[in-house]
Length: 145
Image (tube, rainbow, N blue to C red; front, side):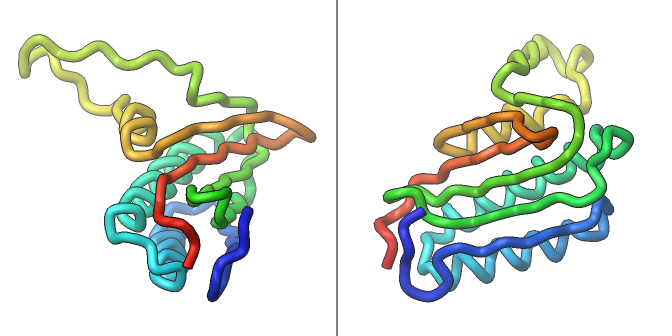
């Protein structure tokens, strides 16, 4: 991650509890503001971090995900959001797109979080090592200030 003025890298550890979501959002927005990111990028970072962490808290709670580490920083001209947890291996890149409903009656609630993350981020990397999931989402942004 390329250093920028202000706080080029930031880390946050949160408990596996939904009450942590507002803290994550505030942390993301504070860092984005310090990096002079466009509002669009800050919004996408917030949306994706909230969705990914909510999925970990909801689906990996019984799998050893006691705390979740988030990191923000620069990788060239992109902002990287890394999310690390100790739940079972889960690569969101392998999840197929949900079928689109042909009518309102056929529409299902849920299952759109991963497609949303794919849509609002510009790149997804994943690896599972040392018993941890390491998901990195990339967001195109102006060069670091």
